[in-house]
Every structure is written in structure tokens, then in C-alpha cells.
Image (cartoon, rainbow, N blue to C red; front, side):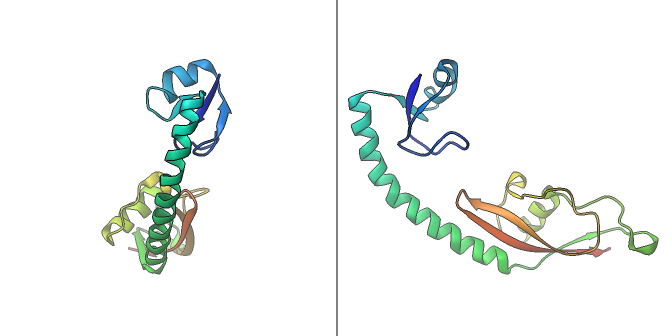
Length: 147
């Protein structure tokens, strides 16, 4: 089944794209949530009108996200963990811990937006990518210190 996307959907397409999807996916997910429309001439015209408004809105959102990412990158984030002999950590620092530290500094970040390949298991300073917008990623410096 072919549909026109009304919003950007990860791994599928961006706003205004005509994509071919399974009928059940369109019928049960995309259409009820108003993420897509069936392919008709009227819907194509409607999507074109929406695209013009959305491009201006996207540009505004991206500039705000870049400014937010810049402020977030300049923040000093430190996470304290208990350590044993030879500075070995008990446990690790996860995306949820970094998200809480960012929230304490005034940044609203969901733990799923913190992209760690694996939890931090050593003391030191690390650069962690945090996705702020789908096109903007902030590089946050996180210091893991002994408690």
C-alpha cells in the first residue's frame, strides 16, 4: 500500500514522501495516528500546502535545537560513584544517570536520547552524544568522579 507521510518517521521517510508500506502497518498504525494519508490527488495538494508551513517551522526548531545543544555542550556534568581499591567502580554510569545529571542542571533530556554504546565503567572524562533534534546532536562532557 502506498501512503504519503505527514511527519518524519525514522527508518521510513520524511514529510511528503510517498512510500510503500504493508497494508496492516498503514491501516493499524500510520493512518489512525494521522502520520500518513492515502495517495490521492487531493491529499497530494494538502501535503504540499503542509510542507510549505512545515519547512519554516522545521528551520525554526532546528535553530532553537542548535542553541540548546550549544548550551548543553558547555554545561559541566559530573556523576559521582563509589569506588573500591585501585579506583575500580562499583556499578556503572548509564544513560539514565546522565539524563538525571542534565536535569539537575536544567536540561530536559529523555534517557533514550543519550546515546551510549555501553555504560561508562571507569573514572575519568568522557564525551557523550545527546540527541536534541533529529538533525542536531550535542556532545556533552561527562566526568565520572569518586564519591
